[in-house]
Image (cartoon, rainbow, N blue to C red; front, top):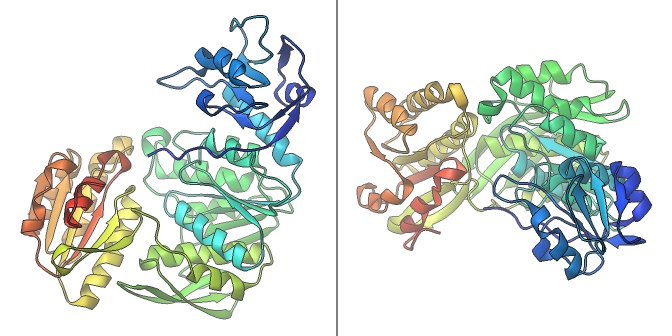
Amino acid sequence: MATPIPANKARFRADEVASATGGILRGPAWEEACGVVTDSRAVQPGNLFVALRGEQFDAHDFAVQAFETGAVAVMVEAGRSLPAHVSAIEVDDTLHALGELAKAHRDAWNGKLVAITGSVGKTTTKELVTCALRAAGHRVLATKGNLNNRIGVPMTIFELDDAVDVAVIEMGTSQPGEIARLAEIASPDVALVTRASLAHTQGLGSIEAVADEKVALLQALATDGVAIAYGDDAPVKKRASVVRAKRKIFYGRTAGNDVRVVDWAVDATGTSAHFQVRGKDVEIHMSLLGEGAVLNAAGALGIALGLDASIEDAARGIAQVKPAPGRMQPRAALGDRLLIDDSYNANPASVQVALEASRAIAKKRGVPLIVVLGDMRELGAHGEEAHRKVGELVANSDVFLFIGVGEAMHGAVVAANERGTDTLWFERADNCGQIIDRLPLHSVVLIKGSRSMEMERVVGPLLGGESR
């Protein structure tokens, strides 16, 4: 589900817009815009409307409507015909110009900007960092929902004002060069890469290419920036070690990391973790589940360290974070079952993390573990092998019943079944409504799949209602 873009009050004079974007002013003169908007339905008087082209729409079709609704001017691509009464800025590419305008706004802002990317855990890390820094006394603006692309990042940056002293910006990618462009726009002071794994490889090609793409964020840092990376990921660490930022912080499980996970234990109420931050012991009990959450918390502590924030305050903030909907969210299900709702998204690395946490919880409760997995999308040529390996992983994880959903996950079901695991397979998530009759009482049930698989349709009936 797309996240609504928040309103902003970014101010630009006409000459500032032209200078930042390289655009040409057309039509009646105007002085200043207050607020940048890309949705003609959201235009308020005085806004600057930027007409973007999408796969299914072209906002140029609504430029005149936006102006007549109250926009002080519209930004359009050269060659578009507009009535003489419409004030406009003509640019070569409105998406690129949107980024350039956001860059100008960010450059005029005096706070610190933290940027986060990675194949796994970037959204949870963002939430942990936000709470950690707020607990340490910072006034934080963070990316909302999934606004982590070439539209969402600029629109988040436009929200920056004097009431904010730290911005926490999440960045996602599906094609080469996207992270580098977002980093160019955001100009981060502190940047973190979680890890590189098989995610979006359909657009990037290989894990090495994913690592190159992610670490482009760290390469954008100035010499006085702080580069933070998951130190147990060899491709990421190799690349992060040679970026020009003088301060480098690594986190992970192994000795030698600046923020080290010493130990952790999980149950249905959350996870207790023991960290060492540059040799200092830190204990945190958080509501989040599993080792993935622990490593994300270690990354958040790394950012606190990089900003010279109080580690004690940061730890207190981390402990307050609650699971986001569909992200390793424990939920009470029918039949005294514990549902681990991780239905928001999936890739091979995040499936492994979720499976390990769910297995630990089931073992501690002494109950069967049921795993329901939907297809992992956007893996390109790696898809078939990745799904087969997931099936092997499930077969080696003491799973009572494995339920696969989707064409690609059928390969995982076959692989698990060949290794002696009981399995079921359904073509679509909405075919799974009656699986509750096959699940043991008191069991732990993990549900996970790519966003497009709509695995939330499996969640609803297990909670005693319809698909949410």
